[in-house]
Length: 410
Image 1 (tube, rainbow, N blue to C red):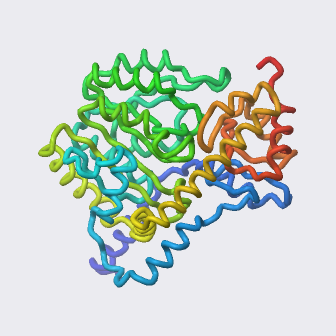
Image 2 (image 1 turned 180 degrees about the vertical axis):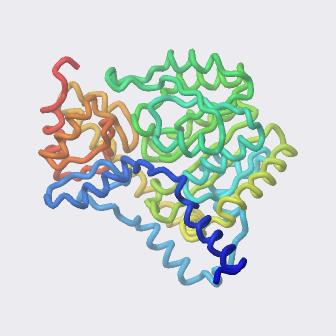
Image 3 (image 1 turned 120 degrees about the vertical axis):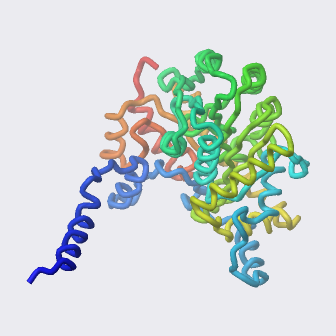
């Protein structure tokens, strides 16, 4: 006998069964798919240039000496795993202010910041702040850009305006086209800028171009949103921040998403921060209160371990010195790899003029697929490859395989 209660239960069960029927299958992340392809390839000499991690001369992604030492200190001295609060490690945030904005920035009342789960967390928190402050906000995004920029920022509801930045075939920054696009921006619009070591192109603005962008930002009342994910891996910590600091100084308001995953080698610990420069101290405190509320709704409390390790390193002179030495070694190795690749063929000379972990090869998807199938060399379909993924033993094999597939008319 079916009672009213049984019928109601059956209806609720059917409703639950239909909950996910409205979902459509989603395409997988193409870069993450490369990880799976590499794992399934049994060839011992395969080369993985897809995932963006630094590898040493032997092809390993090491834990830095300073990180190991700081972790031991943390393990021996940490007395609790209680929550730190929504802002995260306050001292870490202060240290990151100085690293990003320059010495003494931690005392600037116009700049507020929070610890975030990596650079991705910082980008999303910034996007949510923008949408909260102005639901009609637009952000100008140069193309190509890191593939996750668009979903991270756009899915928060911020309008995206794409503009040219880099010509993959011509292997050059399209600076005039970029500036012409930014001239169409309205006061209060944002512009997304790679602080250094452009991903995926490796092609950064030079000093004069950064100054021109700073002048335009000031003249048109634009708000820079700077993604600083590779500070120290281009030419050095101060050198890599110089252009971004010009633009920030020229703007009344600015946002900076910063990551330590790469320059401290703490990828899986997800160490980042978002800093916002406001027009004055009062506005900065309003911004901070909004950041705290938004962060509470996304991750509530950021993870502690990685940020604590970074803080210990920077607050311990001998560890800080060791980290600076290791970072300089990583930077020098990347520059050496770029020079070696560029030396194999004049058509690759542009690679030595670029910075950071990534560059884009002027080859098509068919050539990328051929490199995977015949050579066991894996990279993104766009030809974007991780320079720092090469070992000393395989860089020559990689370069020769690429040269054999370069268009003759480059």
